[in-house]
Figure (cartoon, rainbow, N blue to C red):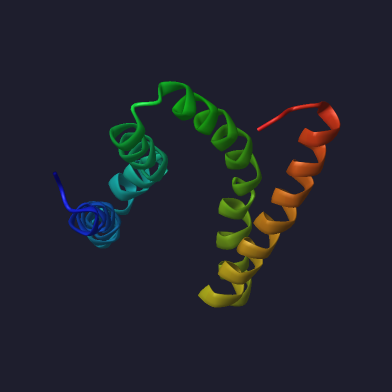
Length: 120
């Protein structure tokens, strides 16, 4: 029987290694890193870990469906951030505004989904 703590550490190390790899790749080849970063790696890793632990494909299906709806409100952040970084010259204001916009759009999305009768 595997130790729950060792498994949790393994999950963190593998997941963290992917993030480190993408950020290091961006230093060398931004185009390739952008393509890799645009892949839904976090979602894919979460699906794999969740399925490995539960063997519940319907749970993964429900999770993927919910993820789809919450990806949409994140997309404007990827346009707002670079625009603000160019205008202000600062990373932190662009990041903060991008996160704030995403949070606002998450709440709007939740209200619209509820209104449309979409159950997550």
